Length: 119
Image (cartoon, rainbow, N blue to C red):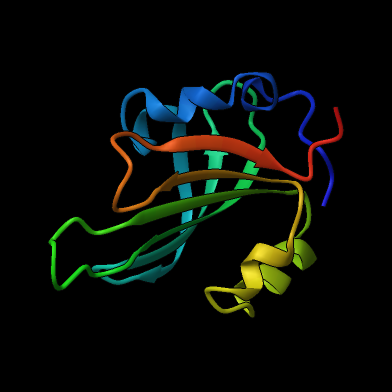
């Protein structure tokens, strides 16, 4: 995947924490829409960069503090999107660069970071 250097999230990944997903992105397509798993194609409202987006929530049956994970993978082509749609929950983590917003059960706030970003 290509680095989205023209997108504000490349330099300011923490912006995914402000507001809702709808505030920063337009949803162009929905691929999966389940209560604990969601996949869609998003378009950045500022620059138009496309992202394959996944929300995944694990159920914490004991403590009730469900860990949540959001993955944003910049895409440019229909082939990129088709490849990502074929992946499972773990397979998507093989793609980079990708922006992660991880909120494990024991964290007080989510952690936001790029995977595969060359500094």
